Length: 136
Image (cartoon, rainbow, N blue to C red):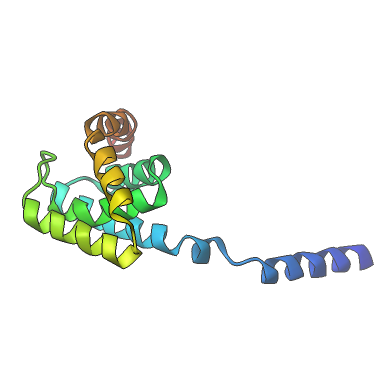
């Protein structure tokens, strides 16, 4: 029993000294919530499909890219079209400023987004079957 107690104390000390994963991923967590909510509200996706797509993009994009996409998704409709280009640009610019991002990095992210059709097709390959299975 003494070894178990020592191990438990050691584990507790490690846990206390290590910040929780949720604290380390605050920006990603907030971006995920925004992306999921916009997917449900504006794109009309099911909870399974929107959860899958949110996770897919979070895993495939860099953190700053995912945070940027989270402020643009509210301006995307069910057909994948921007409903308000100026609103999306204003939101992206505000996110750039909030994050203290350089104009160079902002341009790189916009370049990544110009190739989103291919990434969206990959997401559909994964998330549409998940949606269909969830609806069975």
